[in-house]
Length: 273
Image (cartoon, rainbow, N blue to C red; front, side, top):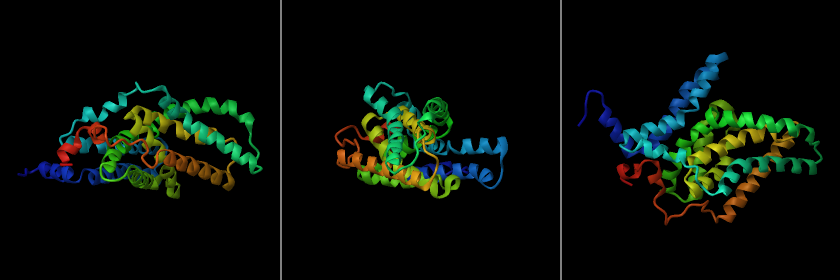
């Protein structure tokens, strides 16, 4: 049955293709809001549009959950999941810092000058940047990427393949903002998958997201150069390979547990999975 509004037809299509619907909505919402800023709108208006666009993945996920008849409250509940073993908090807060501080060691071996005198100021700057990124500079994406898309991808593919696909989706989403710089999320994504699979906590994924940007911006104590970029790439790739090897490609996923998709509002039930 249809109505003049066409809403039932829309819901049927979303239920039939929830993941595709989500990706199209996430890209559409974000890119539409970013377009004016990308093409020249600056100042406060441009900043507002850029910030609003970053909420696209979460808004898209909420819409798909709602239109599919799932529980929006259930989908958002992992944002409040803070009672997890302390080692996961250490991982979320400390891994990015450890990775980017280790870049300094690599660069020192390569003969680059490491400005250790910057470390004190970097620590203070790290805190402010962390709060901003976690709240409105990237952390707000997590209910979409991890809280919605990853579960569905892992229900169809191996954890490693699902992670690679999400990395591509996540990376290309950044394309209007960063150009070829979109490859960054494709390297980070394995660290998020392991944390999400082990804890089911969106809050910790937000914390991890918030920690990556300030660690990159403030804890690499060497002036920018192609050597720095290469060292960062090498450290991230090496760490990702180690994590994949240690988990034998499972990245914390346990097929014996309750289906992970249930954590995102029981969408698999209404989508017929």
